[in-house]
Amino acid sequence: MRAFKIIGIFILAVILCGAVTVGAVLWSQSASTERAQAELEPFYLPPDPLPAGKPGDILRSEPMPNIALNNASAHRVLYLSEDVHGKPVAVSGMIFVPNGKPAKGDRQVIAWAHPTTGMGDKCAPSRTPDPLAVMTWAQEMVDLGWVVSATDYAGLGTPGIEYYLVGRSEAQDVLNSVRMAQRFPESHAGSEYGVFGHSQGGHSALWTGELSKSYAPELKLTGVAAAAPAAEFVALVDQQWNTMIGWVIGPQVMLSWPATYPDVSVDQVVSDAARGNWRNIAEKCNIEGGLAGLIEEELGNQPFAMNPAENPAWHRALIDQTPKPLPAELPTLVIQSVNDGVVFANTTALLQQKWCAAGSNISVDWLGPIRNIGAQTHQFTAVVAGPSVANWFQDRFAGRPAHSNCATTPAVAPYQSPTTGRSN
Image (tube, rainbow, N blue to C red; front, top):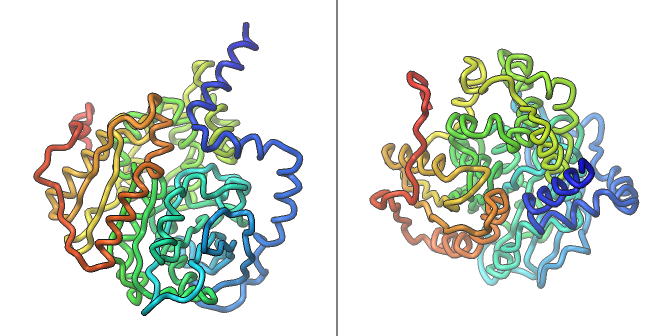
């Protein structure tokens, strides 16, 4: 009976993570994958010491001939960025460049910020066999003449830890991917760009909006698009800390946030069940982590001994990493499914409420159920939203004004904390 239960859990994990990732998982478990990763490894090992240079400088690049894009080239890139402490670091990523020269002027850039993948090096999008599986809109954007840059984030695919859900680090990697695109040979990329992110990448995109002027003043950000952004962290953690999703996300935060905040430690919140296992789960890719979380949940285990939002140090970090409302002059588009099982719709409704009250020029597009299972709905949000995001950026690059829909009632009620006396 137990064997059948484990098989059932595996099937549920496949459903949870979506058909898009099933092939990647099977690929990651095969002997050919191990060989492929070994062959890729030299590319991802940066020079030691790093050469002198500026953020965005290209250390090396190579073609990705298996990427199925028409009339465009795809390249794997290693470039310079900075960590949260201002130390130079090598970051991997990708760039997709339309063939030929633009008819006039420079090309605009779309900087893609990817969703949670897991913290193991093989989980980096540029190291997977089909990174376009969650970037189905990329063909449309290169057809429009735009360059697409796609960071892996520091420490993912390259040495070091990924500063997972640490906004400054993520945003710097995104902004430096735009600089990288400008310096890539024959890209003809200019200074005008937009940022598009999903889930973790939605968090990255919103933070990119916040840091764009101070960190990269020479670049011109025309708009921010975020699909199911992990943004209102207290509201999200309140609802997910003791769930299977907590088993997938929690270990990655346990690894990255103590490296960012001196007063935050794993021991303050970790459960006994997770104490000896959380690092191992953090290093797994999504479907493997989801399977591990489902098994732990089936055994009645929780990743946290308490709600991290109720620990003072963790609560301060949650507030600090929650993106602040962007100014009205920077248009923002958010896409959210009403039945998302990972980033709950009520957290995005809370974001909409706060940002509208602050005067942001924000429009939230509410999607009906994409798939029957909420986690799978989350997986496909950016795929479904891609064409509308491309249309929205066409208007931004053309200089047409964006209009908020703050006068429209959200499709779901904003989250309200059941705990009194605590700020969300």
